[in-house]
Length: 410
Image (cartoon, rainbow, N blue to C red):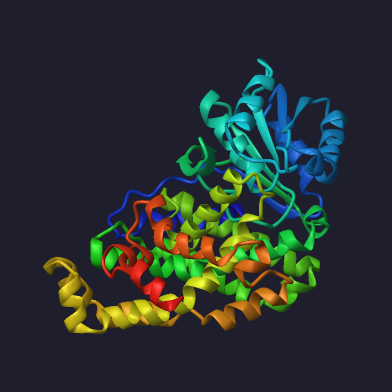
C-alpha cells in the first residue's frame, strides 16, 4: 500500500482546495498473512533498541505473543504494557490508562507498538506524541478507521474529546489475526464505514453554509472506501480473507483521508456526536462499554430518516427558513439548496442501513445496545455541543428548535 500513499501525496500536491494538506509519514504498510513477521523485520532494520508493546489481555493472546516471539527470534529487546480494564472489564482510553502507559514505559524504549484495536491505538498514539517516540500500528481487529489517523479520542474527566497527536510510522495488519477477531468487531468496523454516509453529507453541508474547510479529494477517498464496503458487504459478512482484506483496507484509507486533511471531518459528523454522547453516559453510569463502530452504525441509521425528513422539510420551506435563519445563513442555504438536498438524498434510509448492518450481525436500533428512548432524545438535543461543527444535527437544534420537534415526535 506504499504505492497508494505515493499516489495520494501526488494528488494532494496538485489539489486546489485551498487547505494545507498534511504529509503522510507512514513508511510501510503491510496487509498480509505474515504481517507480524514483517513487523519484526521492519523494527530490526530500523535499528530500534527496545520496543514497547501496548496491549491488553485479549490482544496479547491475539497477536502480542506472536509478535513477541518474532522479536525474540530477531534479538529485539521489548517489554509489554498490559492496560488494565476498569470495573466493567473494559479497556478505556482515560487518564488512568494513559498514566499507566507512561509509568510503565522504559527509559530505553525507542519505538511503541500498538497491539490492538481503537482504544489501544489511542493510548499508544497519546504516549508516542507526548514522549516523542514513534509508534507502529498492529491492528488485531478490523473494527475502526483510526489506525492511520492523527486523532486520539480520549476520555478526560468523563468527556470524550479528540486530540490531534501523531500518525504511525508503519502499519502491519495480519490477515490471519484479523480473520480470527470476533464477529462483533468485524460488524463494528463495517458500522464505522457506514457512518461515512452522514459524515460526508454533514461535512459538505457545513462547507456550503458556514464556509468550514472542505477538500473534494479527501471526500473522494472516503467515499470510495465506503463504497468498497457496500459493494462487498456479502464478502465481508462471510469473514473470509478477501472480505476482511476489503474491510481493513477501507478502514485504513478512511484513516489516511483524515490524516491528509488533518481533522476528522470526513469521517465524523452528527452520528459520531451521538455515539460519543452515549459513551459518556455509559461511563457516568458505570455501565459496560459498547463498541464504537456498533454505536455509530446505529446512530447513522437513527439520523438518516431525521435528516431526510425533518431537516429537508425545514430547509425547503422558504417561509419557515426565513423566520429561523439570519440573512447570511438563509442566503447560503437557498443558493445551495439543490446540492444540499442531493447530499442528504444520497444517504440510504434507516431501513436500508439497518439491512446492511444486519448482514454483518450488527445492531440496528439503540435499544439493542442498551440505549433507551430517554437517552436517545437527550442525545438528539445535546450531542451536537460536543464538537464545534455545523452539522445538520446542529442546524436542527440551534436554528430549527429541534428539541421541540423531538417533543412533538414523542
